[in-house]
Amino acid sequence: IAEAKRTITQVIGEGPVDSAVVADVLASQAEIMEEQAGQSQPTIALVAHEDMNGMMRHFVEIHREQLKVFQLVGTSSTCNMLRELGLDALGETKSGPLGGDQEVGAMICQGNLQAVFFFRDPLSSHANIADIEALCRLADCYQVYQCTNYRSASAVLSFMYKRHLKRVGGCSRGSVMMPAGVTNLADFVQPEYQ
Image 1 (spheres, rainbow, N blue to C red):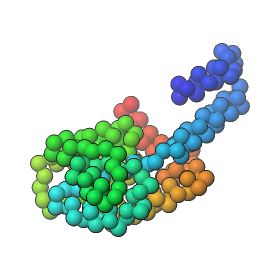
Image 2 (cartoon, helix red, strand yellow):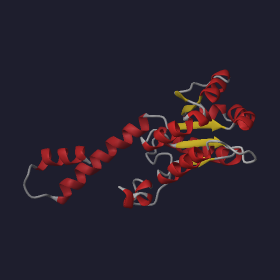
Image 3 (cartoon, rainbow, N blue to C red):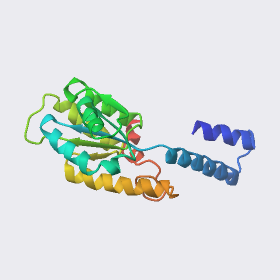
Image 4 (tube, helix red, strand yellow):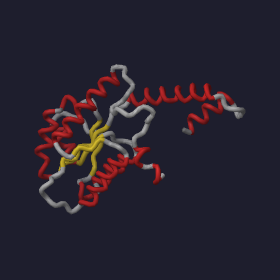
């Protein structure tokens, strides 16, 4: 917004505002942002509880080709598995009980993640349940894709992959379909807290 204001001031000065000029400047800024977004790869965090590591490994083996087009982050054990399977990991977090869930949550808040695939073990209790719930809440607050099982992760990955290919192929819509006039879904969730 600050960049758009500076540009508008440079174009029209401090005088009366011409709405057509403002619309042109904002459209230009939007095109620049779309180009920048199109140049970067969306980032997915891969996390699994200990008893779900086998399922995460199977997921990665089956979807390896699709995962290659994304930047991947995860816990150190997940990142080691990714490397064993020939995929690059952008970064590692600590294990969940040692703050890894909070690190992933921070990435969400900073706008650095587009999806979290967190294969949770639904049949075991977890010492860091408060961290897990906080991570899920942040995914909801920031409208980040959040998948907690193989089937939903597979469906979302397929959708993101197809959207990524369309964007790379010239479609500027990005990896999420939004209602007309909406630029940030999180704005619908967060306005009272900003």
